[in-house]
Image (tube, rainbow over all chains, first blue to last red; front, top):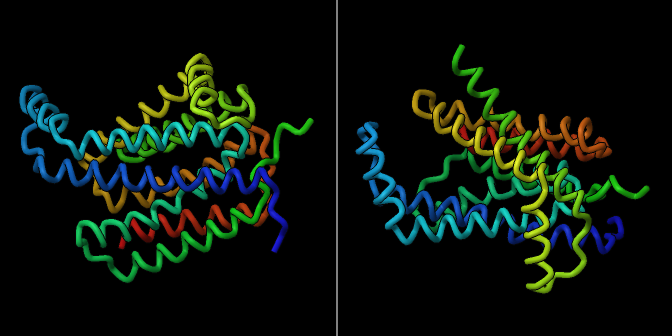
Length: 138
Length: 122
């Protein structure tokens, strides 16, 4: 086990809100949009009505709020950490998404998805063992 | 023809946008102080960066290309293809941001791409 530097720990800590709010944002938006119902017409008035219903849903607003917190945390961590570290490490949210939709929305997770979840976790484990920052030391 | 073209816009828009935002954040430099006031100052400085807005424009292009693509293409095709954006992002980080990607990071990126594709297809 390599000794983790302060920078490494700081990066990993900031990954928590990134992952939590990206996943929560997508699940909340999905919940809100599903309550609104499927878009069946694509005329401008129909789309306007759809947007109006979307923005009157508290779930949609909670989703947007979560995604804004995600974006702010993402920007903050990129002020010091490598993009090639943060972006794939944050992909652990793709592993969390099936878990959250399974628990909260009762969606069925297929075996292929569970394998995908495991492969993502393995990949993220490898990435977090590389140095979080490789630029800007000159 | 329109599907690969639109997919290219999705990947280049989202990855290019994030790389541009990263460049902007590196101009600001490492944040050491996490008080609410310092974070506000950081956000204001971020909004003043040209590269931040360029990145936001590219992210919007990628997002609307994705929405357009999804009006005719199946999600189970689109998301696995966008999983490639982690590999494209790695290359862009090396080329444009000068990041040094050790083999273990490339291996992790490859696994993440495969895993995201599997989750999307499953």
